[in-house]
View 1 (tube, rainbow, N blue to C red):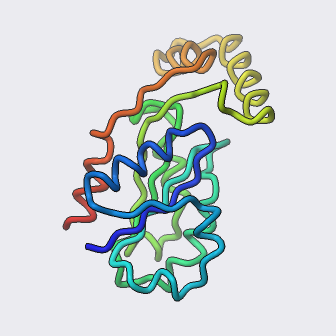
View 2 (view 1 turned 60 degrees about the vertical axis):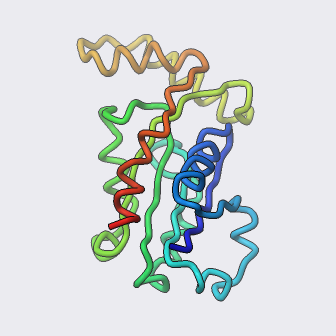
Amino acid sequence: MNLLIVYASQTGFTKKYADWLAEKTGGETMDIKDAEAKDDKFFADYDAIVFGGWANAGKIVKSAWFTSRIDGWKGKKLAIYCVGASPNDGPHVDDMLNKVLTADQQKYAKVFYCQGGLDYDKMSFGSRLAMKAFAAILKKKKTDDPAEKLMAEMVGKSYDISDPKYLDPIISYLEA
């Protein structure tokens, strides 16, 4: 399979998953900035195209680049993976993933989630500020929900919960 993995990564987690996926599948990686400069003909020889972006405010950063083109890529294996700070079973992960593709696009493309982490040292100033504000809100919130309590504890500092095993569903989809 001739696989292209395009990724947008701010702090390195999404790139790490792109590199792991390429290593496991023999695929080729490309930063979104390079992919945006390519015309549609460039993508014609790939059997599969995967886009990886990071979660931000319930959306996948730069996923519009992919979703605006996939109608022209029908017949290829198409997937999006999102990397975020929440564990894979986080309370809002499924809601976010279900909004990425239209009902028609869901017939020929799939969306996946890979837990990553937070790296405050590599975040842009705006992202760091937003995450610190979000962490403060979560700490003040009174909740009995263990998932929300864990999230409040986690987002206050940098951490890495990424693991190549979270690529297994993507690899299974690509190989099917």
